[in-house]
Image 1 (cartoon, helix red, strand yellow):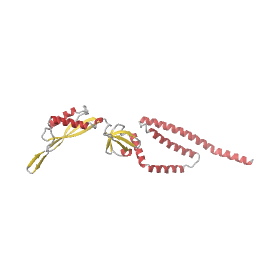
Image 2 (cartoon, rainbow, N blue to C red):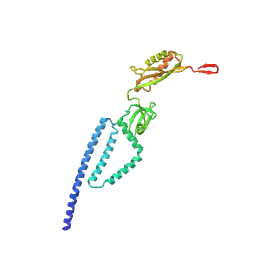
Image 3 (cartoon, rainbow, N blue to C red):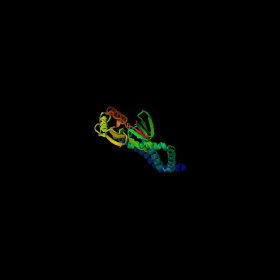
Image 4 (cartoon, rainbow, N blue to C red):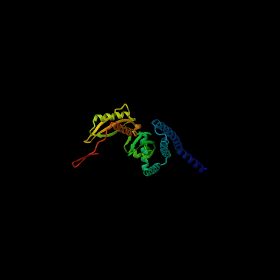
Length: 273
């Protein structure tokens, strides 16, 4: 009888001692899961408002949810009186090992987040980076896909994009395209300029409400060199240079304007090419 009484007293003491801890841990776990749900939903709505790609959102939210749940688990264990420093050390060591093993992948992942956050370009933009030029097909978390004008697919790691200069040809909507033309030194400057300016009025893809410049940029003993600067829509950046070259070449042919003659002196004899 005394043993039963002692056992009952011991159980009662343990229930009194640990019951409140179990209750508080349970309430903490339930409240924490509810709060995590609210936080992830709120961040999901914020991502939608910020225009973050929808195919990226589930991954980001899942990563956030896992991190919050791990933090909640450690808090619950601590509330139960369990020493969590060893768990934290193990998690930290595992995270360090994984981070070292996936160093390049994590750098590309971080680069993807930066591209999605700051948006230096969007899908459909024509960009140049690392010596490559193409239209942005897709921006993924680890890489970006470009399509070149000759229909090649380029896959560039995001880290290499964010750590290099990016030229976005599409962002401002209009671009200036430069071309150079050389004619023989004997032609009148104003005549040649007038021929080029009239040729530009017949060229397609040029913006009519912009001022196009025809400048004499170089004068040598044999040639006049003109720099032609025209404004176009960004969507015409690939066609416009060829259109300008063809329009000016046709105008030169109509007016019988030729290129510079190469004069070479050999002893006392002069030959013209």
